[in-house]
Structure formats: structure tokens, C-alpha cells
Length: 136
Image (cartoon, rainbow, N blue to C red; front, side, top):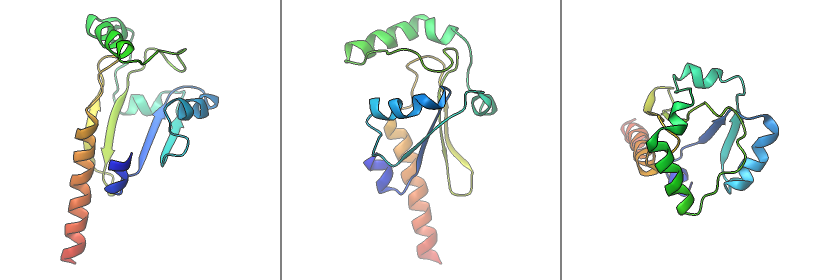
């Protein structure tokens, strides 16, 4: 979070569980006091609009099982599933005009983009804004 704050980037997370799951999620991931907006769309309309993968195969393919085992070995435990088990994640970064500057569609459970890639893309937007401000 500090890296995103340094480059003046707002962070929003969109899940698909029921609204009562939001606060426990924020607590579990140490986001209670973080400048993060956590939203939920149990209808999955946002996920469909982004073309995010949907289906059980991503959760049970060999790569996914390896990713789950690696995560567990690193000390992460899977709690009860809250939301749609078949819905896969993604990461999206938009600039202030709404243009998509970074997009990642997860194809399996542990397929997350490296955080440094998101921060680098956010920093690029921040640098462009600063250059535009300096030029005007």
C-alpha cells in the first residue's frame, strides 16, 4: 500500500461474496485502516464485463494445486470460501481518464500479477501526470 500511496493511486478491490463478508475480509488482510475501497458484486456483472475466467477447471488444474500447496507452505491457510468458487480474479489499473493501463486476467487460483508490475504501471501514470503539470 505505501508504494501505491507514494504515486497517488487509489486502490479498489471488487469481490463477489455477500456484503457481510467485506469487513472480515478487510480484517483478515490487514486492510481495516488501509486506504482501500472494498466492494462486492455477488451478481458477477463486473467480472463478466471484464471477461474474467469462470469455471472450476482453474481451481483444480495441476498448476492450481501446486499454487495452493506453495501458498499453504508459505503460511497462508484457506478459510471458508465466500462468494462464487468458480469466479477467477483479475487486476486492472486505469488512469484518471478511465483508460486501462494494466490488465491481468487470472487463469488459475494463484495466478496473480506481480505487485511490482502494478506499482510500476501506477508510477508511470504518476510520472506522466507530473510531466504534464510541469509543461502547463
